[in-house]
Image (cartoon, rainbow, N blue to C red):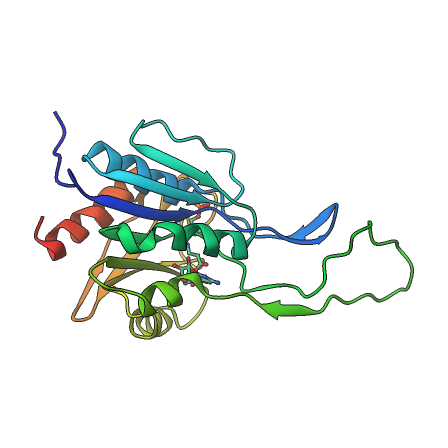
Length: 219
Ligand code: PMT
């Protein structure tokens, strides 16, 4: 019988990439598969949580019946979906790879090949996690940082700026970490602590993250 530490708790998790449409056939996306977020959802649910999983496009399907899946496509849809639930959850974990920019105009017809150069004007998307930090009441808020340089400094900056209780850093410089892989290598920062973990399966990484959440929340 698994430990039921999250019994009675509702956990909101974002997962996967977002797709920002350019025209009816093209989009700006990224390499997130959703594996990290879905692993967190399964683990939290197996420990008794009710999970609200807001996922961008992903092939994955949740298995535990205590996971409620909400599928979205774009960052702005993910924003709207998250804030339907955010005020009523105990824990929120933002593992989605959300696009920072989206095309200013989405062409209604397929863009034709014409000039030798072509540019798309982009506008900044709203930062979902930043807004969660601003609207935080009693939620325990966990963010992710995916970095390629100045990793620790950037992660600690996001911890503070987005008013997080915890940030999970994965670096694309570590082999087997980040997008698509079945494994990840993380460091976790809280206000006053840093923990370093070995390369592990995303299922095991999810356990490590949730163990630290339990420790900090005294569950
Ligand atoms: O899905 P997988 O293939 O398993 O890959 C997992 C992962 C690499 C996507 C995951 O482990 C991860 O690192 N997710 C966060 C990726 C990311 O977008 O990091 P960031 O440093 O750009 O963003 C920082 C935080 O702000 C993240 O928690 C992100 O969800 C959030 N954010 C960012 C932009 C935005 N507009 N809204 C947000 O909420």
